[in-house]
Image (cartoon, rainbow, N blue to C red; front, side, top):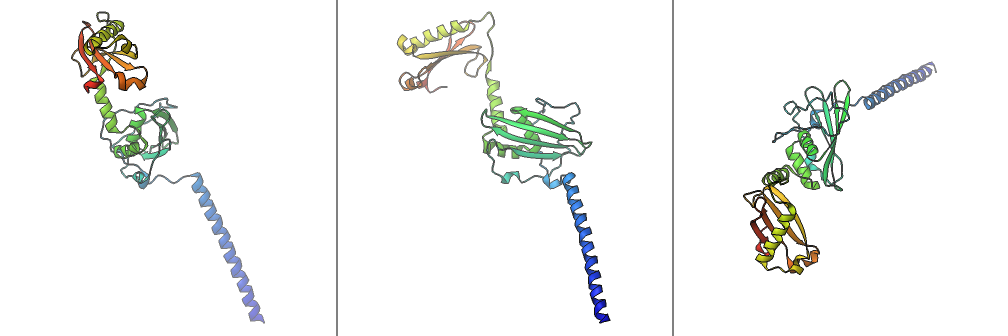
Length: 277
């Protein structure tokens, strides 16, 4: 009987010891989890994006919340592990995120998307400094595109842009090339006015293409002055005649003329059937 009682007491004691151990263990785990929630783990190398800029550009903040203490992002000091962003399927207006940390401990988080309503790339940037100071910036358009590419890399930016319909780097280079060939402006006092350029263009087009006045009356006329245009060798007015009613295009076509802005003479006269333009 005494031996049995001793066994029972021993079992009870063992149960109490194990129970206390579980309570202490659970308290420790709960404390660790709560601590993890309040103090996030640092970003690891595998969570960073690669920055591989192939173009030289300067990122300038647009509508900064605070920028006095902002530290420039150093492409040479940014970690070089690439995220699995290429495996995702993107859609316009969906917010994507890129994160990068440099050697000084500064973390840059960019949340970006392609706004379908105004066909513009937009980005919200958060900069977290090691001293816990947080700065925020808002970018859009070309500035946003450059900043996103700076954070996630050119290849990843182009992949994302192609999927959502945003401009890729190749698109921007082509656009810059076109813009460098076409330079518009305003004529000085020594050059002919827009009204005179339009009058001369209509008269010359009517003569060359045997247009009647009732046909000309069905056109909307616009004019633009170019100091540089690949189709002409001199500064000129470009005058365009387009059907006011687009349904008339197949019947009356369209016409345009380049008028020398200094002399008022023709530099070139064209129609839609000429296959130019």
